[in-house]
Image: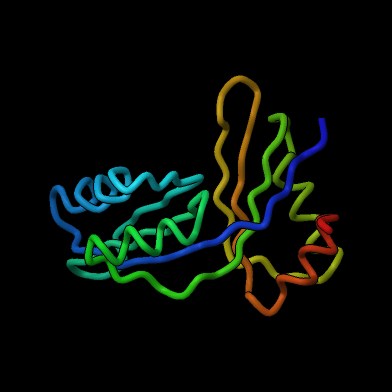
Length: 138
């Protein structure tokens, strides 16, 4: 089965690294109807945690974040690759980018169950057009 590749919006935010803060922020997004395609949260510096969010609808996230008092960074572009899980699935996407001489910033991938996987590929923003071409997007 062929992979699906979609250009997605990526937003970052720093929050307090304390009990319940993630639940508060994500609860506010939920209550505003924001659907996240992907989320990573991790400690970033003393007393802070970093949220990396890929929303289904960027404008909805921006609006909900503002209402919740969450300062988010400037929108970045990333790529969501999904398909049938198999050995080397992510390696194949990265090989296409390497062939186009694109240096990937980061990758997060997970098996979604039922034989599916998904990956978010982060890259320098100057390379967005090259990635579109390398991954066969129109």
